Length: 183
Ligand code: NI
Image (cartoon, rainbow, N blue to C red; front, side, top):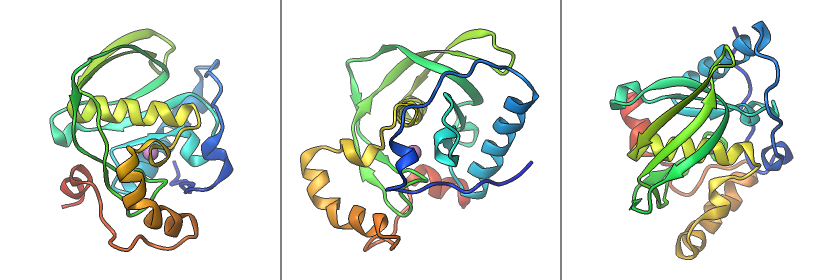
């Protein structure tokens, strides 16, 4: 097991579309373990393989401390989302130090495969829904700071440029869910 390097914006790999996972083997299990270890090391609650430079469609989430679930989600697809939205701050390990209010659907239903390749579904609300949608965006080469609402985009433009230049944002802040985890 190993902690891998987390790519940060504007690394070009973060803007590429990941390929479906086809082999459910030992190597995949090793990758998932490394992803958990890398995520914990960074005090994160979700990580997509893309963020460690592996262009495959899998992600890990651990929101057990927040009352949700922990798991590996392979080839995930959104099956349903609620029309009802949630407010809340969002951060990303690939955009270090930034936390920005970002609306998301309140509830999602996801279809995915587990480490054995078995097809499953899972539903999540609030923070779990946010995590699923955020990490699944990574699989399509999307980083949340490029999808902010116009006023937030403006407010955080300078910070985003600083982070792209390898500098910390003006006021370094972790989202509340991550602060809780590392407390
Ligand atoms: Ni992210």
